Structures are given as C-alpha cells and as structure tokens.
Amino acid sequence: MDPALLREREAFRKKALATPSIEKKKKDESSFKDDSKKKSKSVSSVNAAPKLDAASYKTMAGSSSYRFGVLARIVRHMRSRHQDGDDHPLSLDDILDETNQLDVGSKIKQWLQTEALQNNPKIECSLDGKYIFKPVYKIKDKKSLLRLLKQQDLKGLGGIFLEDVQESLPHCERALKNLAQEILYITRPTDKKKILFYNDRTATLDVDDEFVKLWRATAVDAMDDAKIEEYLEKQGIKSMQDHGPKKPIAPKRKKVSQKRRQFKKPRDNEHLKDVLETYEDNTLTQKGVSIK
Image (cartoon, rainbow, N blue to C red; front, side, top):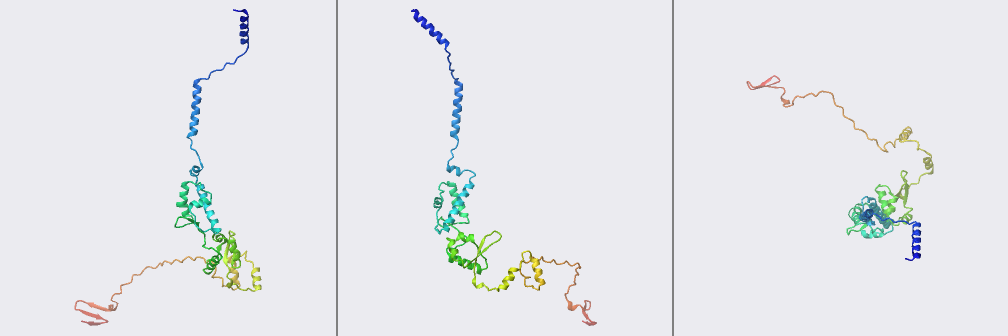
C-alpha cells in the first residue's frame, strides 16, 4: 500500500478523534405512546362537549329573565303603536318581526302564544288569534276624552290620572292642548301624580275679595281636627259636627238581670176560679150559692 495514503489515513483519524461530536438519543417508544394517548383523550373530550349556539343558549335553564324581557319589549312596542294611532291587530310573527326578535326559540314562542300574551292585562287577543294593545280607557280623540271627564264628574267618580290618559289616547299632547280650558289639573301631594278633572263652569261662584283674604289669612296647618272642632264650639258654630269621618261606636251589651225567674201558674180556666165542684152529689157552688 502506498505510504502516502497511509499517512493521510492516519492524519484523518487523529483529526476525527480531536473534534467533539453530539450524539442524538432515540426516544423511548413507550413514552411516545403515552403522549399520543393523552392527546387523543383531550381531542375527544373537546369534541364531546356540547356546542352552544344562540338558540340553545336562550332556551337553557335559568332563562326566565330572558323570556320576560321578550314579553316586556312586546308590550312596550304595542303601547307605542297605540299611542301613534296604529290600532290594527298583529299576529305573533309580525310582532316579533317588528321588535327584531325573530331568533327566539320555539318554546318561548309557544309560551307567548298560549300563556303570556293571553293573560297579560295590557294585551287584548282577537278572535282570529291576533293581538292589540288594551288601554285603560277606550278613548280615541278629544271628544271622547271630554265625554269621559263629564261622566266622571256627573257620577261623582272624581278625576283620572294623566298617565292613564297618555297611555290610552293617541296623540295625547295635541288633544290636551286643545282642551286646556275644559280640564283642571290637580297634583296629588303623596306621589306627585297629576289628576285630570272636568272644569264645570256652571258650578263657578263669584266669591267676595274680602272673604278670599280672610280665607287665605287663616292658617290651620298646626291645628288638628280636635282643636278645630273645639274652636268652632267656642264660637257657637255647630254645623261641622256631623261632617268628616265618623268613629265607629261599639254596640252596648245588655246587662244580664240577676233576678230569679218566677214560674207563673197556668191560666187555664181563669173564669172558673171561684167555682167549687163536688162530684158526690153533682153540685156546683159559686159565692155561697149551690146549684145541682
């Protein structure tokens, strides 16, 4: 063999031994199998979980607030339609379409159709299965409103709430503006609600200015009913004593008499009390006279 080739071979071996090398270890097959099993289990668990979409989420348990939210939105829409003058009835699909709630589930739609809208006091169901808003009063214009106020005044039923009129009468502000001279507004001090009364001009009286001044100058804020009644009695005024709320009077109990009952003798044959009858010789004796 050529000595030059031998020298090159020896130099290559020395150089290879001098340079460091990194050995790659082979993975154990058992560990690889365990990892593959874990990955497959996690993928299967993800696939087994139920998918949630909008329809299933709305029909899940605990969605009662969502159902009543749908109902409240329908009632508000029907009220606004009535106030705008739209009085034609709508089907359930038309109502859901106008309120942008066509994505409700079948269970909620069935609940609305069979229970919620049927029993709602603000919704009226027609014979053909359509729905319309049910106002507090059946009034359509200013004439019907004035007629209602007159009937309330004649029958002594008092006034009606402004909010009920606003809910019942379409274009309410325009009608109230035209009837400004025919209506009286009173604010209730307890809850600050406005009440409408009919302004009956036939019952107006001209009161003397001096009497008005005396009336306004007399302050009775710090006096109760008992003090006012006492003051009127001192002044010799008794016309107010029968007015106002009457106190219930407890019925008096009858006293049980302690006397013993005396048994009376029978009153049969009172007219024969002086007659003495003997059965020996069949004679009757009355006041010393004997009769056979």
